[in-house]
Image (cartoon, rainbow, N blue to C red; front, side, top):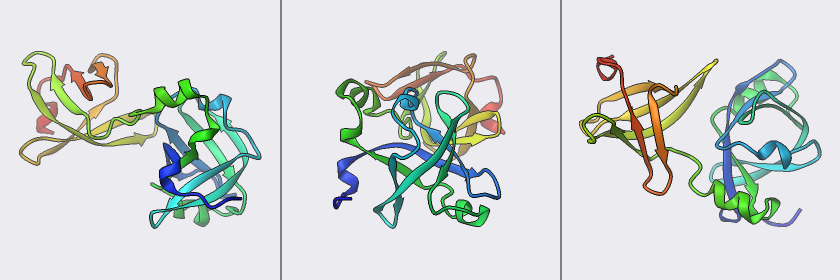
Length: 178
């Protein structure tokens, strides 16, 4: 395998947690469509100390178009899978067709400004996407450094504008005060 650097890759996801005592891990991908490109035998890179470490995929089972259970070669225990928790997944940019790379550009929403649909004012910035069982949450930090969570739900998140890097939301009253 050739020498490879982080800049030569695309951040495509994050390891959420260990999935079984046999070393499988639950992975969240930033965008749909990767199920057509990732299969057993492929390599993916996991960031360790700002360096890409290659892992070969032994098995992959898709839960939906953004969540998968992945078994990696050499990761054979729950403890080894726990060590991978919260680590970024990077794939070589040459592993994808150009049009998918264009879609991936900015696929992560961390750093997006959150705009209130009613007042049209910024209420904060996305600092993390948290996969918590069946419900995904956006962690938001307001201008006053107050942190709160927004459930990822179609009634709350009205629009994601990737060009402007904004998310327009309709928050239930009192949600920011929790």
